[in-house]
Length: 210
Image (cartoon, rainbow, N blue to C red):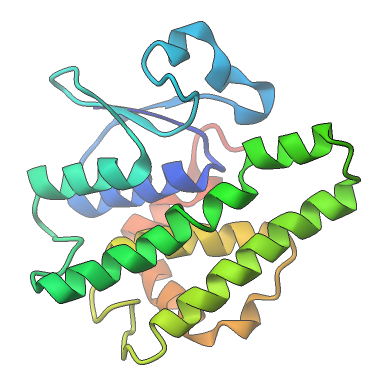
């Protein structure tokens, strides 16, 4: 397999964790987002959105969107499972993951922030926009799992929810968010960081890290 990504991309980070948890190896092909390499014609030919990650399977299939990639990995390599067996629990895990991947992360990603700068917002306001998006999303996620014993987001093993949470907390810190306001999320993050698959997927462990 080949994983097209960027070391700091939280969406790529999610997929790296999934690959590690499944014990799968992939060739990592970096695309420097700040240099616009994701907009190169050769890359747009395989991912017309010009986003990372993109996964190329051993059979040559092209998969885009991190949650779709992770669920495909989970379905084709079921151990360890990243979603609970119980349908209600599966829905709750997916809802938490989507709260981050669909409603929080996209509002503060590089593409949106670049647009804000182009519209003339000063850098301080651009950063505050990103911090606001993170605070809003993380506060909701804190409430979603407030009654979950843990130590992970949904129980005693990592799920899709944890794969989304850990990269998003890293984003929040980069934008100066005081994450101490989310003790339940930090509990899940601490548990995840004890797992080698999460540690090895961290941005600073990637070969393209700056």
